Length: 245
Length: 221
Image (cartoon, rainbow over all chains, first blue to last red; front, top):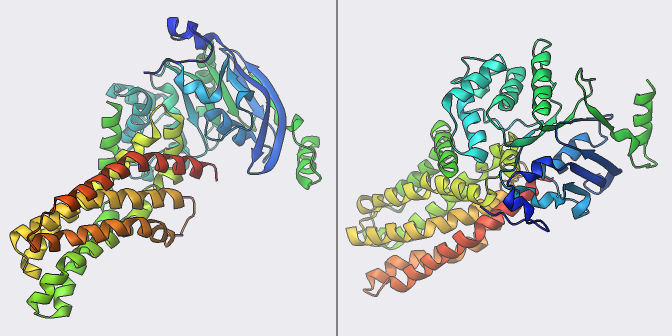
């Protein structure tokens, strides 16, 4: 295990010292391909807070989450940091890991629910208790679905399977990145999910999520439409139109 | 422990979606069986062409099955999850290719024994041929997998894979088919064996990193 961290010997003495540091975006720019979407996004996310990213379609919410997840490269290396550690070195922080639930769920349709969840968790933590999956599935209202193939599930059920990863024992997953977690969910499951999100924040975890719906829990709000690049295209016009309504 | 979990998943997926890889095995058997039927009962001719036929069939069968290697993982988001997780992408690519080779190249090694009844090769000749396949097919599979990783975001461009991989695979084909004839002349096969092994080691050391870089890029398109 590599413990090398830039400019900080303290992390080696305190393996989880990073958990107290805030996640900082420092005039971050978002572009899709060569097309700039937003410039100068800045926020500070301390432990125990939920950041709700808002904005009209196409403004760059998903792209911002992809940047945070490390799936897209940066134009400036230091514009996203965890305390002092820039994004490319986050994986070197001892016991660090994050949970990213995107539009693609990461579930293979040919495998069963339990096989998929075991695989996804084993990527970070190796072996897992078998009853952990049963209780996670029970929490999302899918108990008894362990050995059902994912191809047999409905869209909403697949999203629930994906969200059940929030209930798996994952103390190390300090940061949750959730892209439109409310999509395709019925109204009975919403309060369950909201309780889970605030419980994670209360334990000192942090969550960054995108959603078009207002959330009934306490969140910080980041409205990306404030950072949109002023193009001559109809892009910004669409944005202002939607906000005037 | 994490490696074992990933390995088990790949094996399970192979078992559950057997149609994709059985197809290329059946192709190999068909070519091997059809050649003697088409050429007629000319045993000396069959004896001569056997290594070339087996190797060309093996090469094409490897290229045939490789295009779906990374496709479903890109489409369903598994690749994203692996990149986000702490699991090294290069290791994942190695496991993926290893399991693919076990259900492809390794079976071809076993099936190459068909040349004894079909082409009238002796047991030692067949053994040499199998040995050449054993050290040659991993390299071929790695090169084909790199081409598959490079073309995975370009849906439906399957013809690009042979275009990318074949020029790099040709030297392996040329050396490996020569191995049996060298043995038949009574010379030592060790130099060719060493060359093929060196190729395999080189490919195994370099290509997984190239594959991981290509897969990372495929997420950005």
